Length: 567
Figure 1 (tube, rainbow, N blue to C red):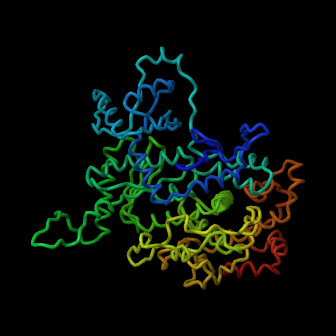
Figure 2 (figure 1 turned 180 degrees about the vertical axis):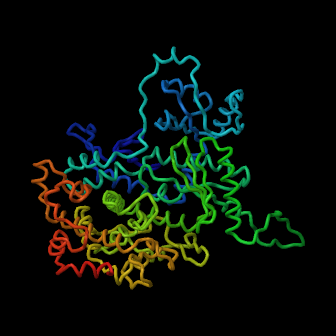
Figure 3 (figure 1 turned 90 degrees about the horizontal axis):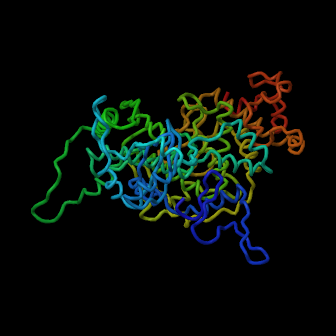
């Protein structure tokens, strides 16, 4: 993060001078560093993240324009590589990562350093394969005498670009001292790192280099999980081609007898214009884009897009055009993620739990999506007493003129300045919030009620979808319309069972016997850890296990569960 301390995979990066907030002073007055807890790390990150969404986007996009990506040989001298590159300009930062070989991301202080480097770099020989002579910011570093230089090679640190396995995560969680600590540990292991975020913005910047060949004022920006603070290592990169800079040149009719304007191609609809633009950019990436493979143009979708794999960065990418409401949704989630460290910790834990139990999937279908789960967590936090996060309407009431945005017929206005939002007085621990989330939605009347984040309360369902979550901006859309009845029933049953496990488990006894406990116990598919206890379970709602669950949660019989989900 640009401000304060950055949480990077559990390591603290201190400013060049001064002491970090976790320093304390011994009796002699000398500083003594202690290792901060996971909760303190998360709180420090939230406190340091005070820039607006737009400020962060602008800063990172500018940073990406000063960045290059180099494919390195297996035996690489980090010192010699940096010495060579430094001859073209000062290097702000760099890191190495593994993706089909070793790569180095290099961020220069000045953009003209890249031009200086490009002037002395050669184009590969065309004797074996013809090439497209496009001067990108993707390079290959070759040592002329690899045998002689191998002795000088030292071990380089590789920045991880994927999270640990669930099995390794469970083992790590068992060493924590509380469920809250477990949840912050999961967040720290799964969230996007600083390095990974830089790589995502670079991928967008490289696509922008192609787009500007046709549209010089265009910008390619990431949205969704890459920027909303809820992205997990390994998630796709959603990006959009933004023409807002070009639209700023549209001026009102000037007074006087003359005016000048561009001659432009006119098309019958904005959708057709979007399809044609994406078709051209998709072909350009497919034919000429270094490392862009598996390009698919999906132009007849509700939101036309181009899907492709960007091999140099290792990302799966989706490119759309001017997806304004999706960008506002990203900003809204960014604000919620910045308000309180418990928000992201709870969201990451619930989404990991859902994935382990098959409630979510990377394949489109009737499953609950991560976006829907995130909305459910935020709604639950709006319902606490006192609330942990404000409603969308409350954020809208704090908006000033600069925050006013109406897209189409939809009011997407909300405050962007985080300092205008009062911090919550709620002091509940994550232990309490995790249990209460499962208890709340295990007893939610899905048959009758819908989830409305604008108002922060349940409202009657406008139609009969099993799960109805109002889109925060497009209020005529249900973001969970894809979820079917069996999947909702599965969610309710698993939520109740999870609440029961958290309520009944003996943490001390489990720790003594070295069994998974707390959040770790919830990340094991139920029945797998103790087959004897689970052998009588049947998939139907009428199982004895579910019946005991209902009793523990003070629900009188099985019909209450069926009624709750609308059967």
